[in-house]
Image (cartoon, rainbow, N blue to C red):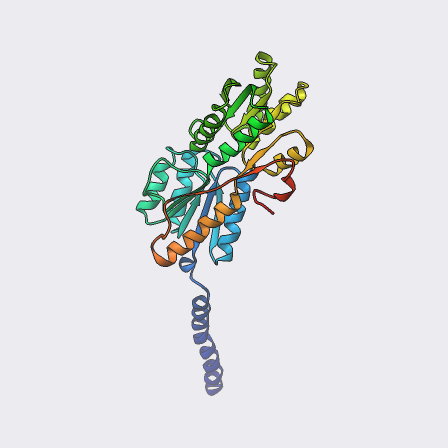
Length: 321
């Protein structure tokens, strides 16, 4: 009995001894989580198709390059954005691609990432600070605004009362676009600005503001808006009050406005290449992580394109087809 017992135990013992070794080998064969490259992509709410398009483009490009991605939204809330940066830093992100929540309000978050050694690549909107982000890649908002304003003046016949709807006061782009509009339209003395009001990039607010404006100024001939969302709100209000003939020009090149241009509800818009900006940021982040330096200037601007009924079919989701 004794001998048989020994013969049985030896194979069992040998099997048990191999199990821990096998388990360790399997764990070693798996890539360690800390070795995975992580790119964090933070934008405003994806309810806006522009921000959705840039987030999806950045996400797809990063994954194509072999990164794990974490896609999040700050919804325009700088405090939430700050928390998302804390999460990115805690997770040892390799890089952050950001469409920020305010030119001044976002400086602290980008500075925090910079101090932690996490490079930030801004898209669409700049911050009011240099040297903290590796890149600030934006549409050439002034050039685009000039394009839109020139078309607006042409459609207005270089004369008549008009309204300007501007974006958020805290947003650098809102000021740049408004400056481009006014530098251009101001060259035509018969163009009369009856009121300039902020609708905070909001379609609902633009609808309400336009309804109020046309009660005070029923003779307006045109509305030029700082983005497409506000242009849609203005066009809806004008149509609802029987003033669908009023010229409306937007800025962004959103799919909804492309459809409205084809339907004759909006006269023109300026397309900014959201997908291109996002892909550029990811490519530059990848290059920076490989070399440790950036061969490009921090501030970079990409030109916009005018979209009219004549060429609207040539454009897709914030890009030329």
